[in-house]
Image (cartoon, rainbow, N blue to C red; front, side):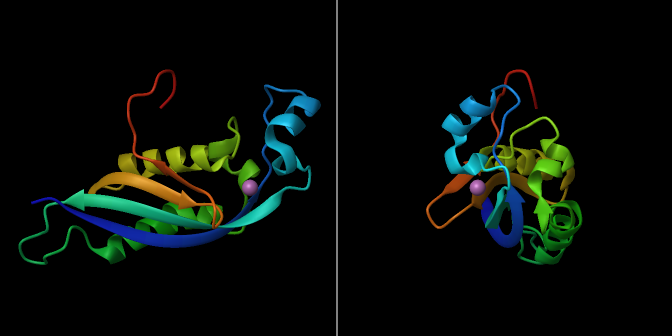
Length: 141
Ligand code: NI
């Protein structure tokens, strides 16, 4: 029996959507108000889904305290109250929430060893949410 566990976190960060692939005018057309030079903030809700066979002794897929301490150390410390444009993972990428979902999924999948990371879901606003669950990608991890 495989069980899934989803844990929810929240962090606040700002970003500005702007791509070096386009000029100023194109950036304004593509990203609209999200291209405002001053940036803007979101209260992101991050959901991490892990799966596995519940441990026969504890009955748990993984210990929430272990997941929490990993997310706190590897994600929250970097992202909480940050400007996403200046965070290492966005050095060469536009800090859209699609890209954020993918980056956090890969970080968790590759480094969290206590359960299989299945999916990352991020709510950017009440109206927008993004999910990433891996898959074959060409070119970049
Ligand atoms: Ni935004």
